[in-house]
Length: 421
Image 1: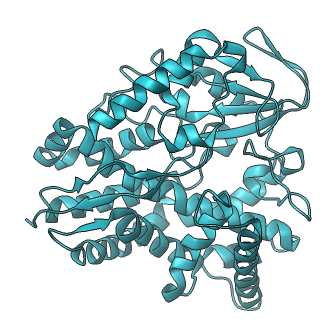
Image 2 (image 1 turned 180 degrees about the vertical axis):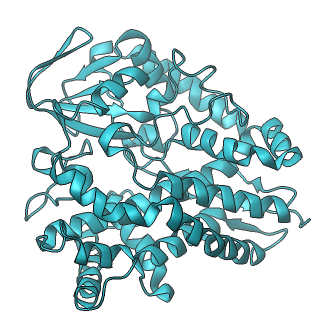
Image 3 (image 1 turned 45 degrees about the vertical axis):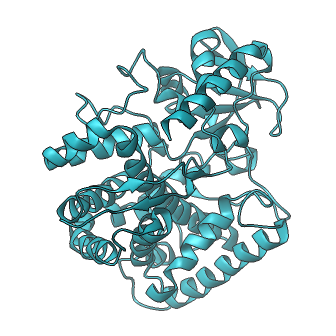
């Protein structure tokens, strides 16, 4: 595996440094699928950290690649808007036949603040303490059912399954249908023709299926006494109960993708990172107290969402570069997390770093990931349960990565567990 990675890196490095600086365009799904974007970001951080790409599949855009510049943009919502009507939070923009889908992550204050506040109790410390034993029981069941000595897909059997179970509980969604949540999440973010989706029609059909199921849940919950699940919170919340259907659907998409993709790709990433760094895996086995620190380091190392996008509401000078009103600004979290001016030895995976939570994967400011503590909790629990059961999980070959510049994750990763403890 290492030889393949080194080879790709050498070719990728030569490619990244041979292109004229003005033509550098990190927003290429192929680069991410091949794990070959690192030298492009390395060069941008060194030579042009606030970089304008005039031509791309997503139109012209600015790349913000250094940690502190990303923070400056992420915390300045007065100038840099998340508003869905302006393009929302991804480089691809939002839209479709009926216009953009509204969701609170793609809103500016004050509306953003009241909608976020409606759902945030579900990830309060009190609620996480209630969820913890349930997540632990399920993690144990998943791991106890894994085959020993046989190859299997870790993404499907473990990462998808645990996150689908948790998500079904948060929505109070029919538990036996939980993998529909995974399917819909994938359909929302996947690119037809480059994924399991064959066509845009298939994508639209699955998204409409999702909307239909959640409209039914809304109708049930709005006519029942308030409960502690996300749909009931939205249906009864003062700021959300009169939402337009498309706004409700937008928030459902946000909660499905936010609750699914990020955690599941970091669970997979943790197994991969420990395999690529056997000294760190040995350190973890020798001292399971390092799990919380390892979890944070994996979230930084993986960076499950590669970017967030903003739109400039006015002309703005950022470190000598004039960003014009209306310009598309892309904060590359994946690059900020490898900024050696802020993080020591950032390309290394070190599970006992001094400040492991000093990373940018959850964003900053008002849009900081609302479910970040739940993500950390699921990762912590799965690793506590893994270390009780298995001396080792071995990755077989290279994983298949997503074709995406937004979701940085894995479609498949073959592993084998040689034995139980």
